[in-house]
Length: 117
Length: 136
Image 1: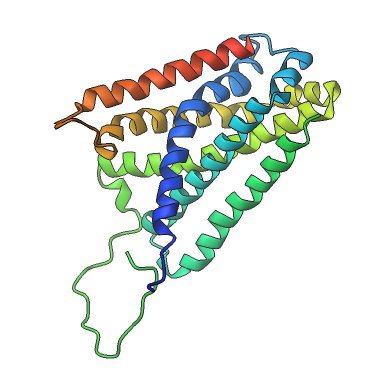
Image 2: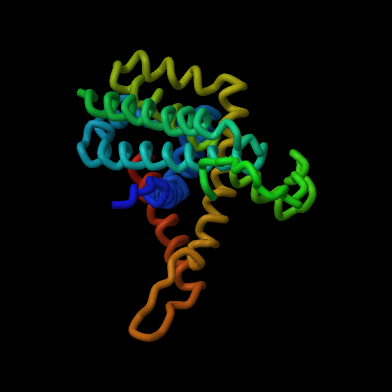
């Protein structure tokens, strides 16, 4: 049997992450990155945010958004280096750096979201 | 695009010239392409930022407030402004190309591109409204 390539899987996760990040990240960065820090809107109270984050569905959605976005980003960044800088001879190193980073951060995301008490 | 480049002994010499490292500065479309590609870095940054927030909230009231103070730091703010620009660019271009990636047939007819784009934008509005409702 011919060896199956991992590429189609990576492209699938790339598009899933593209959708997830396009839908969720703009509003989240607008709120938590700008509106709350700059005082345009008052940030949610600790109790409220803690309550929202503790809900299993929130954690599940956030875990999905985080991991898919990370693999989306890793895949895209890999090709940025590949096409943009044309450093094709470093392919293996780039792959380890990109997907390895995505894996490590996904594990961290799972750990953080799992242990919210 | 094969990952492995094996060189055979009598390989014909390529007649292709290697493009300049700065090929993406040559045309607007190329620049737009590389800008979209660079959004990947900012998406990764935002995931880290979000996880730091999650960590702060899970550690208690005091760490949450510490996170809020840190989020007002000028460097963090500038980074988040740039992130917002890149991410919105990513979202808009992503939804616009969705009809090219998704070919949906209804019976024998192909669903018009505008409808697929519009449903993506609709989903964006719904998610945005839901997050706002949840957080405000």
